[in-house]
Length: 98
Image (cartoon, rainbow, N blue to C red; front, side, top):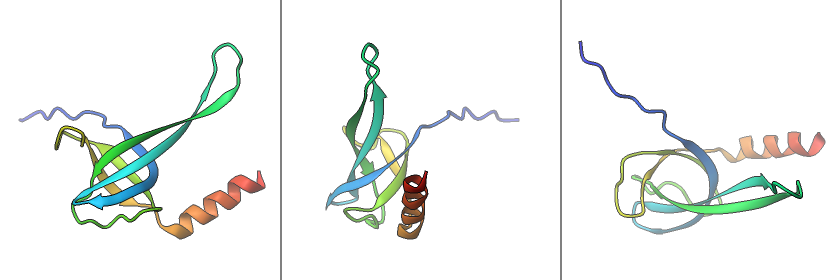
């Protein structure tokens, strides 16, 4: 019986900033952090280069991507799926109501 070494790979969600490269998209992920002393929340944004095999993601779309083996010097993430626009709208309406 063979035992596979399966790691828990990180999944992130962000919006596509650039799709000008072949099979690569640049995704910006925005997270909220809290200052340890002043307890004020502030936004941190980070850009990731994500492997998009079929060139299906376009600028402005929300995507979910996962960590993988290094594909190039900068690309260590693989596109999982594109979040449909209708889903994004319904989630933003729920957040604004609360």
